[in-house]
Image (cartoon, helix red, strand yellow):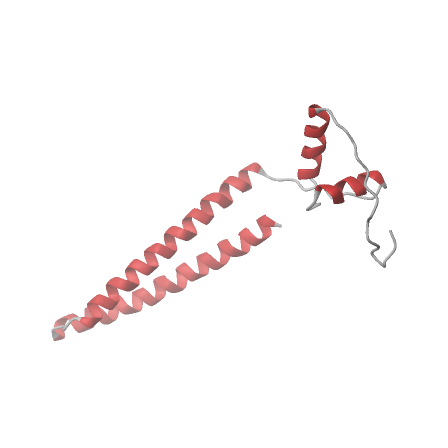
Amino acid sequence: MNAKNKNRVRLLGVLLSPEEFQTFEQNWKSSGCKKMSEFARRKLFGKAIVSTYRNRSLDDFMHEMIHLRKELNALAVNYNQALKKLNSQDRIPSEKSWFLTLEMEHKILLNKVNEIKAKINLMADEWLL
């Protein structure tokens, strides 16, 4: 087709056996084509098809990392809520230094959690491509 992107008005019907369709569908899913019709056109006209390869161990790892990201986020939220509750209560002077130390550790923890989440998000974005 030329660059003007003409409307497609002609229909080509092809009957396949269940085995043929399964093979065709597997080839389509392993390709970089988003639509089956795009894959069929590329095959029909002999154009290059970029195949994707899924690494099973990386898939399992990424599922675990996504789960870990959710758990880290929940822990950070719970920790933040506990600190807010502590902060709202009256403290005696001896607890002030302890509370300040706890607050500094809270900031360090949140920074590390955010750093881990950013890395997981980056890996997830690359994994989904």
